[in-house]
Image (cartoon, rainbow, N blue to C red; front, top):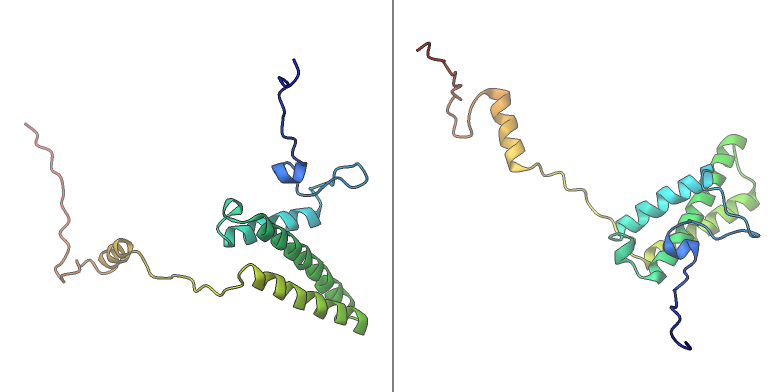
Length: 152
């Protein structure tokens, strides 16, 4: 009987994707909070920018998680500044340091500017031209056909 026992690989809630956050003091984090929802949205967006979670190394995922944490913290600070009308010099210094650290973290996973492709699909473009002016691309007027049923 020795050695015949099945071994199961036990993975954490975070590793297996069952939770965004590890337990805190033995309790699960409520993932319905504004913070958790924003964190989840940003995490998904940034991982998608890198080709999806399946295409990222664990190191890249870790950097993205830390980056997202800084983004949410910076957004919270921005809201506080807007509410108060300004930030104290100490708050602004912290904000600037966090922003600089965020930039460095994002650069390490590939901070790139990607132009958006706005080129229309040629079929959609041509169909739109025909619909707008009633002419085919050759300049000929489009002929509409009408089916007539024979009374025979």
